[in-house]
Image (cartoon, rainbow, N blue to C red; front, side):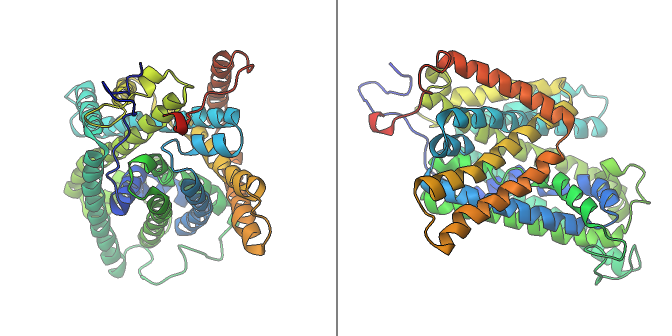
Length: 454
């Protein structure tokens, strides 16, 4: 008897629908963590010769194409499985499993990466205290919050996003004040952050490929479909709004920041620009406070990622491609995938010793696989399977736009680090071997959840 069947009843315990548009958008923004702009500013400013705002604008356009594809598929398949479900239903179950397996790299390691970042900030603040204590406390808080329900996570993330917005407004205000008083460019109205006589499009596109990863998280909220009221209407709006709001914040703040720092000559270490930006703009005390707040923001991002991956594993367990008694279990009281939440928490504890560079390489591969096949799934499902190819509007919506999305993601594949590709392909090979075992060397069909029999 399945653990998801209560005594004396045949109905499956399901995720609780409690989310609305604003909490879902807040979850997405918390996942994206807008303050990462300050961490990447020095790198991209040097790469683009002082045109970070344009690089962000390019990245935003690229991401919005894929956001539109997510929106179309959420309406058609309102499942917590996200890209896994879309590729499974629209292309083929084997493709769906491989997309879901690859996406696990993105989702599964993201909570740990956020805890790793928090550990780094903590070690800078209080080097005398063993960082493993901080890691255990943060992972415990993240796990317990996710166990109790998605509403708890959404409320916490909403608070942190609001505080992030306030901090970013304060920092931007100080930047504007400094520029108006002669810092940097010395003027608040200039085309220089977007274009200049020395501008080169190729480095800007390269910078955009780096910055596209700042948008990771807009896609993760599609995994909340089964916990959102009127998901077919709310989730597509939330996905697009999350990408758009995040992108506008990135472009506007980077514009003023670029006026304050026209080049990277003031940075001692452009690869870690956030502390120096805070020091130059607001002073030592403010820098210390932001470092503390950064610990909280990465925790919020980790909580959102924790929620997303536990839902993805739940759907794969419910389908039967993972052992259902464990991965498909829903706690009867909290209505959350409790065992998955605990498992992700245990993996996040590896932040005590894990390497940040390796973890980041893993998530990049998984994210690009998901983005690519979401765009291809739109073409397969709507343009081919459903025959929505009769009018110019159909061709535009279900062929041209997703092709544009796939091509922009293709530019990211070209610039993917070699380590990401190698680790990702090894992970994919493990997944294919596992699937061959589950299907008895593909003689049996890939297991899928049948809603009519639930």
